[in-house]
Structure formats: C-alpha cells, structure tokens
Length: 167
Image (cartoon, rainbow, N blue to C red; front, side, top):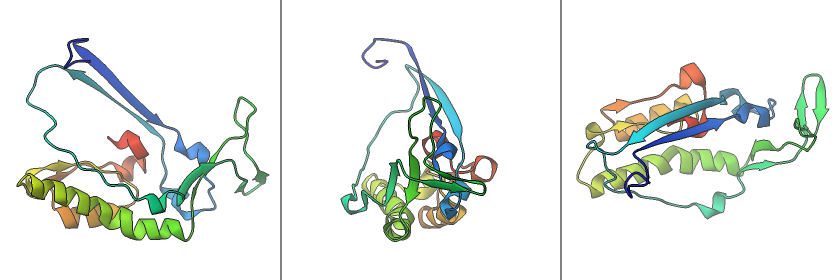
C-alpha cells in the first residue's frame, strides 16, 4: 500500500500466545514464550528487498502440529477448553519425526538456505545482521557458527521462544 501510494504509513503488529497451547510434560514446552511485536513503516529510506529464497520440506508436514488432544498437568488432565467453551488445540512436536526435523531442517536447513542466498548475492555473513527464529540456544549457537553474521540479534534468554514475534 505504501509503494502503491495508498497510504504513507503502515502499522504491522504480530503476537503470540503459544504458552496456552502446549503440554508442559513435553521438553519443548520449556522454551516457549508469549510476545508481541510492532513496526511502523513509511515510504522512503534506503531499505529495499533485494532477493529472497524459499524451500519447502513436505515430508515434515505432520512433525509439528496443532490439534485438539488431551493435555496433562500436575493436578489436571483432559481436553482444554477455551473461554468460548470450545476445545482448545495443543501444539505437539512428534517424538520421532519432530526430532528428525530438529536435527535436519531446523539445524542445518536455515544456514544452508541463508548461505545460498548470501552466495547468490556475493556477500558473506560478516556483511549482515541476522534475526532468526529463536527455538533454542543450541540452534542459535549453531546458526551463528555456520553463518558468522556481523551481528546476531536475539532475545531468547529474556523472552524465550516467541515464534513469529521475534521479528
């Protein structure tokens, strides 16, 4: 809308309330956090999209899912219900395929993809500041070692895994 002249400023807001949708008996739940982010965009400035790169791993489609399923806590078990009275979904990282996704796509997929994009444009990690998904300290450290960015902006210790609100 800004580029097309339909507006001069845009407010982009995102939020995550992931903690309501995890089973805390699962290890991955310990790194999950809620958050919100916002940015005001305006015309002008020197920033522009230069290139992009995507890859889809269809085999991993069911490794991380949201579905209505029983959840367990110290003094409660059952299907959670939202304020509207409807069953609430729970996030699940499948024990077999989810671990494989972590060890392949999440661990090396991101640095492979970013590395290809940087190479295609004749730049190195030292030429960029990086912001990524913040799933775990192990991933952040591995990605930093593989890509070697000039700056790696992250808030994992302060806020946990904020999914899309990181950006």
